[in-house]
Length: 159
Image (cartoon, rainbow, N blue to C red; front, side):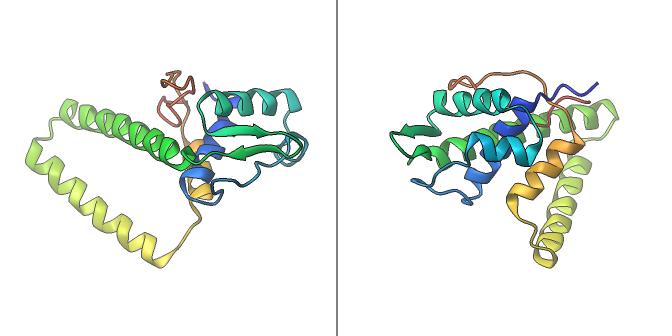
């Protein structure tokens, strides 16, 4: 079962977009109508996602213009991603231990995968936001809330 909601998907996609510096401080967020049409989701869902991003301090309303990316947004988004990655690594480590792998073998696997991912990244520069969407499409999300009130669990629970 996939636990992603449209609102979580939009929040996660915007986190990735901001964390990857595609949207910079002061940039306007896409309009509700634009996101709704592009993602084929209800405008109310987009409004909910934007509200969550405002509550977290990532977006703020600028009178007469719309929602803009705040100065601290990239830092908040990067920290959110680090939290997500750390949680996913713990899950992998738990699975490795249940499978009987010792720390030496686990460390060797991690080093091998780091080298392999570095080689892939240098050969193929996929935009960060597209990579985030691929992560989202491949995995579900468990509900966990950050201090800003956002779900920080993108792609962490089995679908």
